[in-house]
Image 1 (spheres, rainbow, N blue to C red):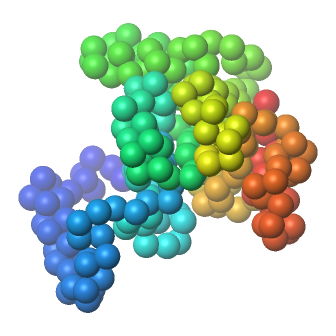
Image 2 (image 1 turned 90 degrees about the vertical axis):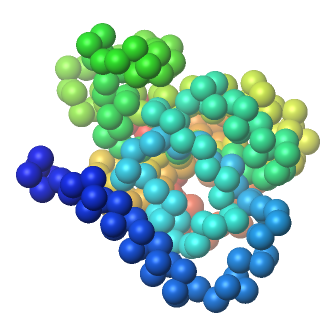
Length: 229
């Protein structure tokens, strides 16, 4: 989208309000009664703010199913209170940490971001540790993808520090995923790939995990991330 194609503030607001009116008109008011007084999510998801990564990729109505926390680079430590709420108060059995290909926050953190605002710098500084260990090959695309993987692994490790006891007792699974809208892994555009499961990153170890044994074998082979690292 070029600058000339960007909507005006008024047009953007109208789109939201007209869209919400369609949402209201298309739904039976009784649908809201189930969650009128409380919520019942099964997933706490920490994901990036990127507009290309959305709950629509799960192909189900996410209302009352997904407790969503977002920040640039899907950083666990930066949102620990919100994540704690999903895990401890709402007691979701799954913590889903979702990165994505061609993440702008990762790209920025790999380069000089000193000219950005103080607030953005402070958020990107949180990505320094997982990205400092990235092996630079000179292939920008490959380095970027390895950095995305490394950050997901790091965020899972941060989550395990907080919730390892729940994982050990079997009441929580922590899944690190990469949403690949660019088809860099050649598994299909828009594919959600599982790259870290409760701290396990080896594809064979993930494949052997009890939590995905009942998954269709064809799908299981398809969704386990082959890793670029």
